Length: 241
Image (cartoon, rainbow, N blue to C red; front, side):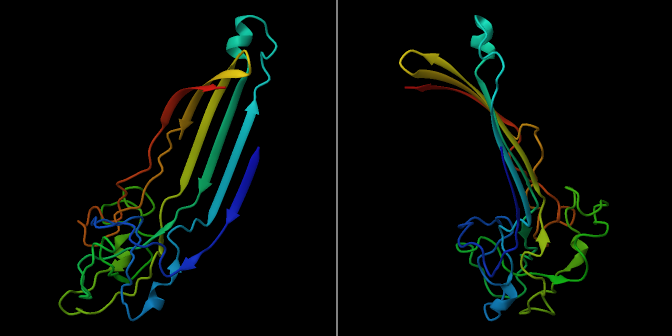
């Protein structure tokens, strides 16, 4: 049995390049381009992949039961091995942005995939009631959009918002992966191995990044609409010789 806990913090100016290609969508809230190319210091913030807390436990157990039983008991119930990996991780950060493009810097979807303009911060995104009537920190409204203010495309054209990069933290991860296997022995050191593997065995909902474009419809800004895969079960036979 192994266990590891990591407490970390990592800062950078950009965590990835060309991660979205030409698709007009954000990937985990990251943007390859600086909001203001003449103020790169404004891009300094938490890395896209920063997970402040991470606990991973893995184990392997050769079950001792029925190993010496005679007849079908030993063949069916003996010789099993169970394995597992359990992961608990806090969320990674993402950027709240505004696709209106008030800064008039132009677009480069083949590079970044989505605009780099950011709004002004006017409150705490982790507190308060969201416009759809739910409290922040829930899948229906992960962050409070009222904490950000879009720049006016007429009176503030050419200006940049003061919101930092990756200042909001996304949902955490809880993943339980499990497997059970049994070897059927044959002459001359040959084995037929049966494997049952279950990923996310408890079907825990590991949510993705919420809608983080303030130019989206008001009732969906801050709403989580994606998640990682649910429970996945697969069986396999493996012949070792």
